Length: 149
Image (cartoon, rainbow, N blue to C red):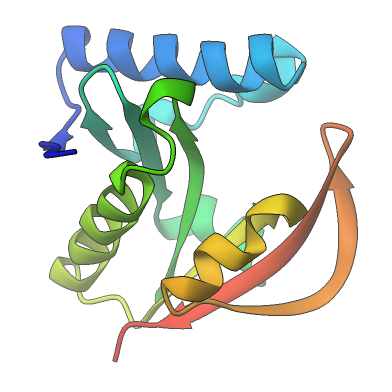
């Protein structure tokens, strides 16, 4: 699948981001809406593969609050790919776009909290799991990280 990944900065882009995340997380995975919409979207970097998927990158204090306080590590999250686009490379392209943005900003690494079923996907992209499993929104997760050096 040839996919175009763009920055989602305007109202239309953010509407598409929210629609994809609502479908994947709230509808499909039964994540409560109040947990999905955490108030950090307006301070995050968002990428969008139109009609296919999205992801975001937390920076600064928002990232440090999740990654153990490391100011040089971004937090990749809210990676969501619609069912018809899964297995086509869309997720990997979204992750690559977010990593490119982190590099452009001079950051040294990326931290994420993967749903356990997706750990192998992130491992193929160079991420290493660490620490124990933990629940988030009723779904088992595990922390992962990758150096961008």
